[in-house]
Length: 133
Image (cartoon, rainbow, N blue to C red):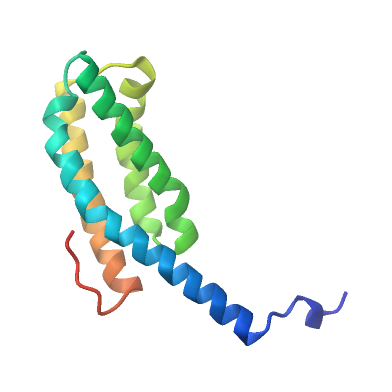
């Protein structure tokens, strides 16, 4: 097949770019509220009760999801920071337990690094957009 066969028309490329832009915007809009929710839940993630286990599981799933999509839509540093948060949560998630005090401190620190990375990339990739992060 010729190279021309693989070339996409400008209209197709513009449509693809518009779709990616919509995905990026939805991605960014979800972050601010979810970061605040996780920040509020961190204190509830300690211990072995069902509330702690559920909070850990919910947060782990969200960070894991962010890891999967971030680099695909151009938020590579955000994805790496989400992976850092997920790696703190994965042991407790798999053991179906709450976080230890050390894990709680690590998660709080990693969550702040995640917020900063997301905010920085949002401004770099979506210029002119105000951040609630």
